[in-house]
Image 1 (spheres, helix red, strand yellow):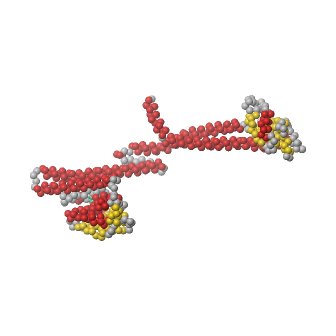
Image 2: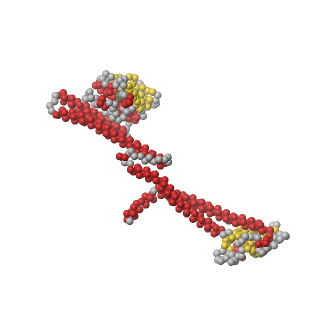
Image 3: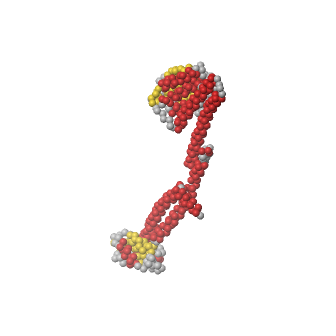
Length: 494
Ligand code: ADP
């Protein structure tokens, strides 16, 4: 019992804050306001109609019987008696007919008998005495023979002057029991009960509707709660074309992006540790072998060269990994300044010249057309150096690597080309991917164990730098003919 109460206490505020509850409340509130306005309108127009209908009837009756009270000389002749066929047909049951002279004295009273004709007349006289046109008065009268005479009945009176030319001969008073107050009361009660009934229905129906409409949201929330880091393959897959299906689809696409980001991250970490394991293993092996026993000096030298090369490979790999991690996390801040790609090309050539000599590769500067751009000097230098280094390392002895710059429309273009072995077509689409190497065994440079081999990160860094400068990189290659990388950046002032 205690448990139940505490769970009720917990869920009640939740329910009060729920969209379902608030939607229903708003719905009922708006409907309540509309119904109240509607009821007031109906009540007031209906009351007006009731009264004007009663007055219309009285006027008609008054006009119909006007002539009956005057003789042929136009003098007041009196009301025909009720037992007379004419007099009997004068009015409806419950109506009251009075003929009053100009002094306010009742000449004749016919139809419904009342206990206080004098006080009625006083009231009527105050409103209609001396008037030349009909006057409507609503007044309470006490009916003779009524069980509760004190209660009285609501009557509507039309007092019409009986004229001969311009002279008022007397007044004809017709009264009819309108029962307006009780009709108004009945109308108010029906409107009130009807409105309350509709509000109750709206409350139930509105809650059902809101609950029904919110169900997919609860489903989305439940499914979203179930999706964990290890379960990113799951999707909500809510069918339909409404807003909630759209929300679910947006959510699904967000999960897809998260999933691919997680996968990229996982692959990156796996590849990075794999890449680092190779040089560590080689260093361990070489050092272990060298320490096994006495060896010729030449072998020690070779072992140290290998350890040195692998150390350099590791340090380069770690640098590249750190650069990529910075780029991915958005921490890389580029310092843009006015530069010329021609100068960057020359500086990068100087940097690479000793490596080219080591590999026996010829470096050539071809047409270096001024190509002004806005860019980060250090990063653009790294971009060109990476491309030149690739050309040198992958072409091999006796080959040539050249560079040129040019302008095309609004673009500054830098090309690094070589006449090396080229890249097979099926690999061209993937060489900008991280850790991708066309032929890992060749890149490991088995022939020359002392030379640091590539990690497959150089071109992905190149692509990132070009992209960060609003540019792009393209590659063209033919087997045994060579490879050309073309970097296109927006021309300064273009
Ligand atoms: P790496 O550190 O292995 O050079 P990169 O990302 O720079 O990594 O290059 C990816 C792969 O593209 C290289 O392993 C190589 O196979 C190929 N490649 C890049 N540049 C050239 C080139 N100029 N000639 C031939 N192959 C190239």
